[in-house]
Structures are given as C-alpha cells and as structure tokens.
Image 1: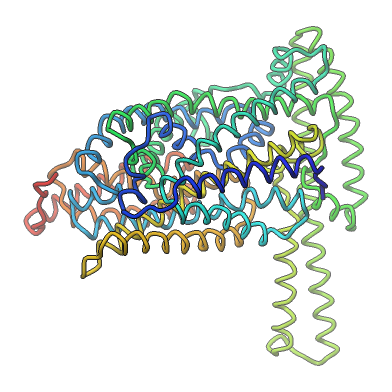
Image 2 (image 1 turned 45 degrees about the horizontal axis):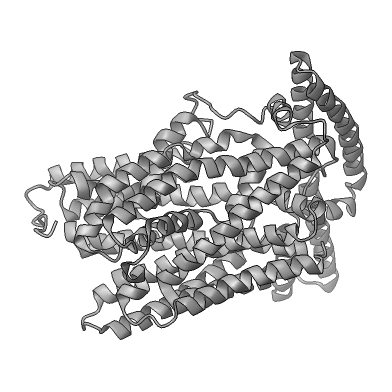
Length: 608
C-alpha cells in the first residue's frame, strides 16, 4: 500500500471537486428534453471533438494502453487505423440523416426506416453492451485507488460512481460536455508532464532517439504488421478493416458517442467535431503508447518487479513457493544487470549483434514473468486445496457427510474465501504497470495530477455512458412505449431517474468485475460482440431499401446468437467480429427478405 503526500492529495481532490462542482453549477436547471438530452443544440465543433475524445478515453486507456506498450510494443496503435476512415463516412452518411430527421437517439432513425420492434431491439443490444462497459470504466480506476489507499474496491466503485452521478443527473448532456473540456485539459497536461519526467529519469547520456533504439532492439517499436495471419490480433488489415467497422458502429450507432455530436449547433459543427477527433485520435493513442515505451526504457536502467502487483508478490512469498519465487527474483536480478549493460553499450554503439543479444535477453525476461504468474497462481490454488482438505477432515470428525447442511455451509464459506483471495491475488499485471511506476518514481504533486488524469478520464467516459443509457431507456423504450403522451417536465424527470438507475447499475457491475488479460481489450471485445450486428442493421437501413422490418429483426437476433457463439469458441480475433457480424446480418436479412418477399407487408416509410 502506498501513502500519498499531502501535496498529491490537494492536487487530486481540488481537480476532481472543481470538475464536479463546475459541471453541476454550470448546467443546473434544464427544463426541456431538448436541453437535457441534446444540450440545447448549442455545442461548438471543438467542444464536440474534445467531448468525443473524452468519451472514448477512459481510465482504461491510460492504464491498459501504457501496459500494452510495455509488454508488447507499439503494434496496438494499428487498432485505430480505421478510425479516420469511419469519421469521414459518418460525416457523409450518418450525420446528414440524423440532422434531417431531428432525432434524439440513433435508434429513433431505425423506427422511421423499419418499425418499433427493430428500434427497441437495437436499443436493448446497446443497453447490454454499454451497461457492461460502464461498469468496467468505473472498475479500472477503482483498482488504482485500491493500490494507492488499500481500501476495498467495492467502496471505491461506489465513491467514483457517485461523483459521476452527481453532475450527470443534475445537468444531463450539457453537464457531460462541459466537464469533458476540463477533463481533457487535465489529461493532456498530465500525460505531457509524465513523458517529460520519464525522459529526465532516463540516464543523461541516453537521448530520446537512443531510447527508441533500445526499445526497438527489444521488439517494442514494430508499429506496422502487414501479415494476413488471423492469429495476430493487431495488424494493418485488422485495423483498417475490422477497426473501420468497429469505429463506424461505435461513433455512428453508439448513443454514448452519437449524443455528443447531436448536441452540435449545426450539421457543419457536428461534422467538423468528428473530423477533429479523426485527426487527433491516432496521434493521441500513439503518444500514450509512447509513454508506455518510455517507461519500458526506464526499466532497462532501473530494476522492475517480476510482477507489478505488490499484494500478489507478498502472497506468493508467504507460501510454500517462496523459495522458488526468490530464486526467480535472483535470476531476474542477474538478467537485469546484463540487460542494463547491453542497453548502455547500445546507446553508445548501434550494433546488430548487441540488438540481437538484447532481444534474446528480453525473451528470457518474458519467460521469467510467465513463471512468476504461474507461481502466484499455484500459491493461491494450493492454499485453497489445503483449506479444502482441512474442511473435509473437520467435517469427518464431526460425522457430517457431503450432503449435510453443515458441509454445504462450510463449502460455501470456502468458496467465498477463494473468490476473495483470487480477486486480491491477480497474475495479469499489465494494467498495474503504469500506476506502479507513477507511485514509486514520479515526484510529489505530479502523482496527484496523474491520478486526477486517470480519474478524470474514468469520470468523463462513465458520465457519457450513463447519460446515453438513460437517454435510450427514456426516449426509445419508456417514452416510445407509453400509451399516454407525457409532457416535457415528466420526461426530463424520468430521464434523470433513469440516469440515477444506470449509475447504480454501473456501480454494481463494477463490483463484480475482475481483471481480464487486459482491460482495454476487454472493453473492445464487449463492443465487437455487439457492434457489428448493430452497424449492419444501420447499413441495411441506409443502403438496402428493399429489405423490410421483419427480415431485419429476425436477422439481427440470429446474427447476435451466431456472433456470441463465434466469440465463445474463438473463431477469429475479436476485431474481425465487427466485420463478421455486419456482413452476416446483411446476408441473413437479404436471404429472409427474398424468401418471404410476398409475406412481408411492412414498407419503407415516407419519412425516410
């Protein structure tokens, strides 16, 4: 557990309270649905661009992306290559339609084109995937503060969620947009300061270009992969094709993003805001990955732990695997000295032999880290097995069999202990790398600022998500299916209630979340499972005028089932699920329409 200096506390608390207070004060008193949901259509293009970026840049972005770069290098940036292409398509196709129809939500358009059940289905699919993602965006910074403060994650999930709920319920879309400008300023300032400090922590005789050479020798600077190997998650082709479809679905059909630009003052402002995002997003992600690379270089000259989660290391050292782990630490210490010597030589003399030796040593270090994860996992599993054996012996002496209530109660206690221990004893430490570096190596004041960066990102993303979830619930489901028409005051109140409810749901999901291999991958996997299908429905609405409502509705349900099965059995890397789902729903809808063309009486509405 780390202890924050009072300066860091002042910087952290002052930053967060200023953002929450300003957002609540500035946007209080929304009286119409237009004001609460679309921000009164008064947002300028640069605010739209920053708001769109802030919505996507959650705490996971800064925790996981830097960890991704540290472990695997710059290749993850290829994930974003399709984003600029998607921005242009959305500006030319999606925005003009949304603006002309004056919709409050993306799914409102689908009722104009198809029918109410198609609108409701796509809205529900959105609620499922975005509701899950909202919980994860709260959980990520809760991990950080649990490391910093030693508090239970459940209390932190609640605290972070409540902060977001306060200003989001109060001011709606305008509150989200207004606060995101301040949050993006904090984010940019903090990350620039972090990079500057990291470069100053690297030895003076190692220049920035030499640092990049050292990272490149360890295989971290391989940005582009032109292979067609489906086993590789991140290639130029998966980014350009799968990434384009994911970005089209996310920015074109996900209400958490659509709501950001629907608040624009005019269609031109909306389009310019998205183009602004398209131009800045890839450089921004490249920069964040670069910060992770520089942290990697820092650890070539300074000892790094085998596992960046201190609590996991403490538990394995207290187990019967302690000696094995200590032996591994000694091997890692010797390896570090060899790597440091080679890195110093490489910084003075660019030699291919040195590069090959450094790459080989880096491969050995990766093996050490895998072995450390194996020992940590064995430690927790062995502790469980020992407790299980003791439980059986205890019950045997009491004369209870495995069907007795006493046995079941004791077994439940044991399983609860294991689940809690497993949460505390994690092996996948990528998401902890950056926060560990921040806490142990950065100066006072900057630690507080970077914690504010990560929490600001979490708050901005979560606020957009619960704002969108509430809007969809209120407008697409509650308001649209009411038999009696309600006035503006009632709908604003209902949307506020749904905002509160979804905030609570996000907190609950966060409390049940746990570390995946990498949090940023988990969020993108959840999106990829649903986005391709929803995007396909929108493309059918835009370009396939002979396809009618019943065919689309049935195709969407069938496609979603198939995509989930495909993900479960790992048919392909998750990025390709976006293309797969989009193409599949198009083909199935076309087939059903042709098969039943004489039975489907639902036509294309004149309003389209």
